[in-house]
Structures are given as structure tokens and as C-alpha cells.
Image (cartoon, rainbow, N blue to C red; front, side, top):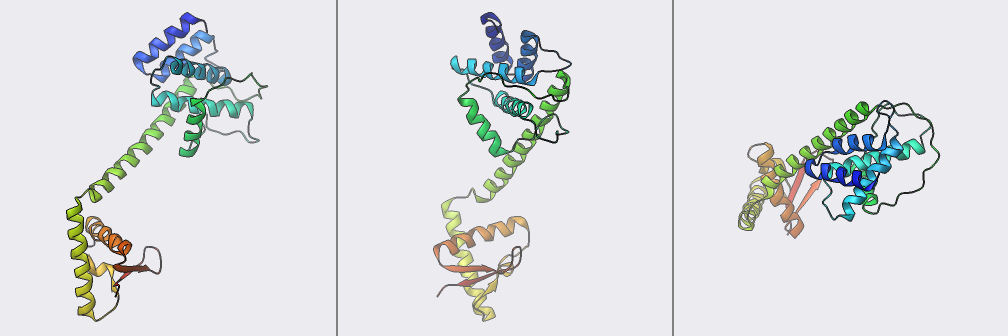
Length: 233
């Protein structure tokens, strides 16, 4: 890339934050064959682009980092292919791998080209479409994680005063029930009025506090089975 085209590329993408624009511009500038994309050259140019953003102290969009991580992995698999070729164009990247690749991207050092092994032809359209699908999968996972976090927050985001009140109420319920049944241990299910998710959580969180403070013991012989609660003497 010459200086002018690098600046044009940076300006284009900084305005749109579109990873597709980055790829299309790189293919055009580097003169890559859209019918047979050179993954190694594309990955190297993409990483060089990120290096330039870092040098100019611009914020690197998360989607750009994600695409760079995938291209970096694709480059690795192109240079060091597995014995059995994967059917999918885009390799799946789990959370740990993504963190590791992201850290590598923070300290980019372009290495001399290595000898490449022959791989199946990938067109520009195939690559972009596969990257879009990978992006959607990542976004769906993030949405589910965010939604789950929000649900949990709704259950536990209560004032200290409210929690203390719940703890006191549950402790009294345990004391009253053990006296009534004349048992040392009572079933957790007996402490919950309605066996519904919200009610279970409302009782379970105070139980965890009580057990952690050493006021009660909570025993469960098997996972997902009954929890037996007893007040410590």
C-alpha cells in the first residue's frame, strides 16, 4: 500500500466503521483476485490497517477486531492446515481464543511470508458472507449473555435493607417450620409458597446469605434434587 491509499482506507473506514469496506478496499488496493482470495495477503493487509489505526491513536471498532481475529486464524490454518480440511470457510472462535487473538492484535508484528499449502478456492463473496454469519452468531451469543445478566440483575438488584428483611423472614420461617414439624431439617420446597422461578430465587438468595453467615446449613444429596435446610444451634 502507498501512503495515499492507506490514508484513504483509514478515512473511509473511520467514517463508516464498516469491516466490509475495509476488506473491499484492501482487495481493490492490493489487486487481489475476488474469485480466489489470497487469505494470507488479505490478513496481512488487514493487520497492517489495524496497526495504522493504533499509530494514529484511533479507537478500533469491536467488529474490526473480531474480523481481524478470524482472518488471523484463517491465515494460520492456511499456512499450517490440519490433516482433514474443515467444511466451513470460517473457523469457530470461542471466547478464550478470541481474547488470546485480541491480545496478539494489540502487539502486531508482521512476520516474513511463510510457504503456503494449497487450500480450496474462496471467493470474496463467500468470505464476506461467512464473516457476516460469524458476526451474527457472535452478536446472538452476546445478546443472550446480556439478557441473562439483566434477568439475574433484576432478581438480585435490591437494597441491603430489603435483603436483610428477606434474610430475617426466611430464618424465622425455618425456625417456625422446624418447630411445627418437630424436625431438625426441613425441605427447601416447603419454604417456597409458589414453585415458580421468581419465588424460588427470592427464597434461594437469602438462603445463600444465611448459609454463608453460618446461621443455617443447606444440604443437597444429588444435583437438582431437594435441598434440606436446618438451623445451626
